[in-house]
Image (cartoon, rainbow, N blue to C red; front, side, top):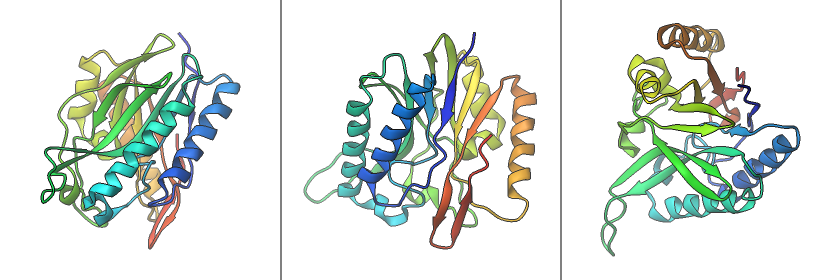
Length: 227
């Protein structure tokens, strides 16, 4: 079986949910015309990375939800295409005095206007520029979906640096791993990523595609180099 896919290695802007959604929509349509049936966006592509304490605002999460719905609606006509979108998602109770109590670093799979699957990041980094445990609750479930007869398992960034999440995806039937990433640059980081992902492929026996950001956010640089 053959799966034609496209990585949306783009410069997503923190807080510009509608603009980021438009980039994803345009990429999906362009990729579809070239024969792709899977589009993979980077980690938190809807809101940009890193959104930091904006993630604590319920209105920000609501705007992300609305942008995701826009992507779903405007890619609904792409028959048989799966669009994987990185975004934050809130959970828990909300009242006048209590905001969202849990949030997830999520990837949702959109097919013909519907969310058919979703995956919550399991490994939340808390070192160097990362402070994800402040904002997110870890997931614990694999996500595997079918596109063009191929079973695709999702991982998000730090998940792929460890064995457990990839093994869960394999046990759930994945034939290939799609990894959404926002991994800041430093000298030698690109080669380091490739070496770790090579180890992951050898350990789990599955091919892997790595979708990464490009651009800059404050002092953090993302150099692309998807593979």
